[in-house]
Length: 284
Image (cartoon, rainbow, N blue to C red):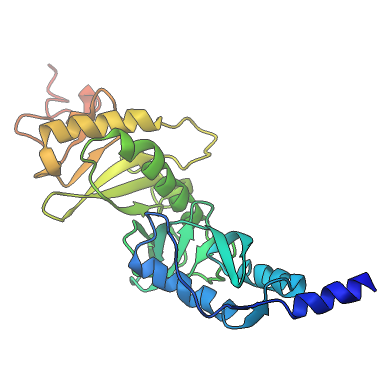
C-alpha cells in the first residue's frame, strides 16, 4: 500500500520539461564544434516531460545518456520544484582520424575509443597505404580495431600532458604518423615507429622522429627529454624557422639531425666507416 501511494505521488509530482535545456558550464576544451556535436547526440534523450520524483523515468534518462558515445558518466540531481541538474563526465577527444585520402572518419579519445566526427582543432592521424589498410570500420563508443590509431592516440595524449606543457611557446602538434608501427614499412634509425609533425611559424609542417609507441617493451625516450630537445631547437630556430625535419630522441646530437643542414654539418648517417669514405681504396 505504501509503495502504491509513493508511486502515485511520484507520478503526480511537478513535471520536469527535459527539452528546456541550458548549459551551466563546460570544460575549456569543449569548443563550439564539439559542443554542437555533443548536444546533437545528447538531444534525443532530452525531449520528454518527467515527474521529478519518478525514479523509473529518472533511471531511464540516466541509462539513455550513458549510451551516448561522448558520455562516460552521469549524475542527476533534483532541483525542486521542477528541474534536473545533470553532471556529465565527458570523453575528451585527443586525435582526429582520417582515411588515406583525407576523408574524415572519427575522433578518438586517449584510450582509442571512437567518437563522432566534429570539425574541432586536434592533431590528426592518416591511414597511409604504406602502413596497412587506408580506411577502417567505425563504431562510435567502441574501441577502434586499428592498432595504428590506438598507438597514435596514446602519443597525442603523451604530447598534450607530458611534452607540450614543458616547452614554452610549444608548436602545435599537427599529425601523429604511426605508419611504421612495428617497423612494418622501413627498418632503421632514421625512420622510427612514430613520427610527429609540428606547425612551423609560417604554418608549414616540420616532421620529427619521435619514438617507439607508448607501452613498447623496448626502451623509450622520456617525455621531459623530448621537451628539452625541442626547447633547444626552438632556441636556435625560433618558431622552427627554416626547418623541414629533425629528431627529438637525441639529447646530445639533436643539432646534427636538423634539416636542412647548416653549412659544414656532415650527414650523421654516413659514411660510417673508412670503407665508405671517398678515399677508400687509395691505399692511404
